[in-house]
Length: 298
Length: 298
Figure 1 (cartoon, helix red, strand yellow):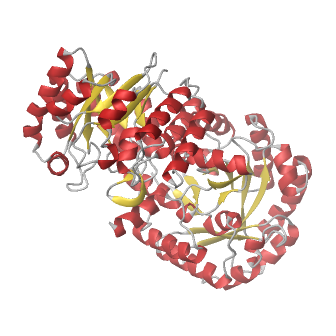
Figure 2 (cartoon, rainbow over the protein chains, first blue to last red):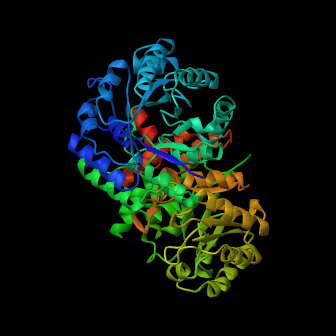
Figure 3 (tube, rainbow over the protein chains, first blue to last red):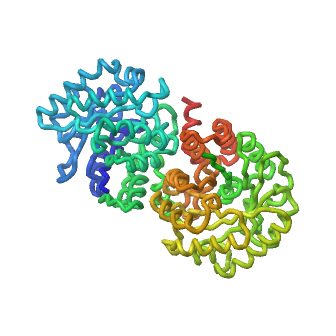
């Protein structure tokens, strides 16, 4: 089995941290992650700096990234304007995003779901004209902080429209970290009836400790692309102090235990996270990282 | 499906915490856990106080426990002397313990594996004469801090001897938290050829974040008894700052998501852990607990 890990720490992680890291530090993080074996890096988001001050340096960072063979740099773009800025940088691939639940979409994007489709369609069209691939993110697939349960039919509808636009992959987000393995199995079983499993990615959060179990079940269901954040960086905006993204270290440990080759050097990845902890001035929640740090002390 | 949760926080959790809690506080923790719906409580260990000062009050605590219907109090006993002390208390059930790996057994019990069997056999015999049930703990089932991999044949040998002595159940310990789901599946597949699944319990640690995924896989393999520690109390003696026991809150959240009725009120359990955090002067690592605490603040 081959699993593709999309490292989202520099984007989804950092945008949920209070500390704003200097561009220089972000670039060094990217370099260190690549040295540790990461090949797919989501580096930033071209949303308006007003909304995500942590990523206000998107353009500068994306222009200064070191070109590396076999490495894909990715960035989120909310609309045509964001894409036009991003197209002038070293970013290789783009991602558009929306929610499966109406209320979360409105709160996050300031538009209803139906009103979001044409905005994203324009982005995907232009990016593809320029020869760039686009990923689609769907948030609140497994639950919405405002609406609670989200019907699978709604997820299918949103995925269908995104694939029609031309995204090559949809990443299914457990935005608030409520999913459990049985639910992941049930939702994926439905989705796989409509879309090939290799066009779907799992984006799990560990807010209630189920991130790794959900990732494991997703792989059992045929999902081969998983998103994760080094050190488990990035909290949950709906619960201060709670965990956010699944930690890359924890996922890599699981994969190596399954005999899956990732090309990632777990020690080097932990060292990168420890280096970043010093810049953030706080420990990161990855369990493997804490175990690695503790073993060094012991 | 019915899952039995054995709450080990007062024993396996506390023995790995630096803070020594007063007996009075421990008794209140037991009462609060029971109010939250916990029915199987491992409350202490009758080892020599020199080895585990956190549990030096074993006798006093075990004498002062409130008698509650449908609640089972359990305690570890290392030998005949420990059992004799424990028999004079309110404890309902006992547990003996040893390791699947020779080096860990020697370091932990100061005896080789073959030399440990007669000591435990004497305990089990006396306890059963007194009408008490005895559980067996096997440590280092999925890996040893000194020997690394532990052959399944060695685990089977130790389990066989324990069942021959008359223990009614063996709890399989991932003492250092190295197990991954594929390994759990493989080891259980072998064990289940020799012992009924309902005589085996899973005792997973979350040191590398795999605790919940391992518990999930164990249930898929037919295991119906799982050990856990409220709040995830108790670290890993081999890696300071790393997590130890699987958190009861995280396990209960998983189970409720699977539609498994536990009789446990998750909010009440979280409140208990928050109450204990104040006594310990530090946050506990359960992800569900952190999410609960954060949601209250948000």
